[in-house]
Image 1 (cartoon, rainbow, N blue to C red):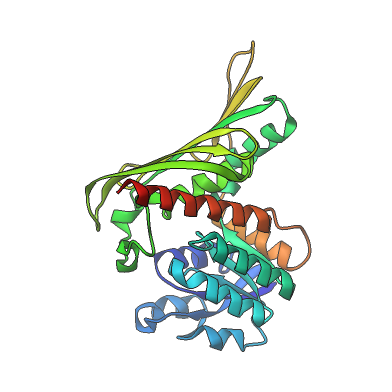
Image 2 (image 1 turned 90 degrees about the horizontal axis):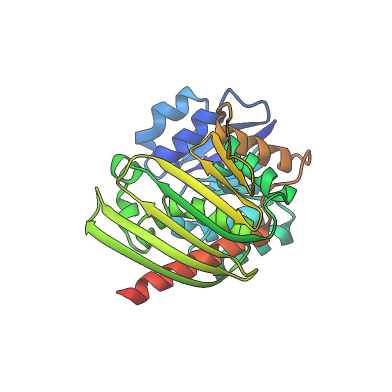
Amino acid sequence: MINAAIVGIGWWGQKIVTAVQGKSTRLRFIRGVSKEPDTVRDFTSRHGIELSTELRDVLADPRVQAVVLATPHSLHTEQILACAQAGKAVFCEKPLALTKADATRSVEACRKAGVLLGIGTNKRFWPCMRELRRVVDSGVLGRLLHVEGHYSNENTGKHFSSWRTNPGEAPAAGLTGSGIHVLDALVSYAGPARRVQAQVLSLQPQPSPLDTITVMFEFERGLSGTLAAIRSTPFYWRIHVFGSEGSAEALGENELVVRLNGKPPQRTTYEPVDSLAAEFEAFADAVAGRAAYPISGEEMIATIAAFEAVVASVKSQV
């Protein structure tokens, strides 16, 4: 059992704890950090979590083997570096950083310290996404030509936090909230981006935004790609990989459609899973040395490099 600390116990931090605490046989939270302890004291008490207000408190605790960061984006890099220096494995919610340089610093610091770095990309653990990976890796689609994705939801308006309205923390409309999950998926199939062109259209500001982000990509491997995200429409997820011999499309959490040349489409629905629980099981297994972590540092850096390029492209359009 990995003893962990959770840093940041807001809406998402509480979702993480609820998915893991008392349910996982591989990881448990024994400590928590919040800058507003009175607002979360009842929650942490119910889950048996010792509460403090400073990251240094948990880094100094020899019982803590891993630290989970559910904190504002701009804090990630320095917090990861502190965890690495303390010899603690660290799991960081997305985005890993706001620039490629900072993402590289984090990956290299953890590599040098010999500690695991995990990243919050729970959509990879949806059944349809796991099966999409299997189909693509099988080669049945032929030469890959194009990848596209769309992820929209209503979370920004429903779970408003003042720091998320700051363009420095959450640039490019829905990019940090939902679009980063699509970007992670596109990079995982197509590799690093070579060229990016993005636009944001906004009709209404925070806290209940009406806006869209649309991005076109050229990837270094020669694939094209597109990304879209809307922060005010009901949940929708789609990742579609196109090849010379067919395509495979992940829809929602549990559905996959495979279309191969000369054959009728094959639509499969899978049993749902708790993707948050699954990603922390994978993290715990990697910390314990039972399995390799499924996302490489190079992929993490490539995703943030593309992220930074999207933000720069959006700013250039203003």
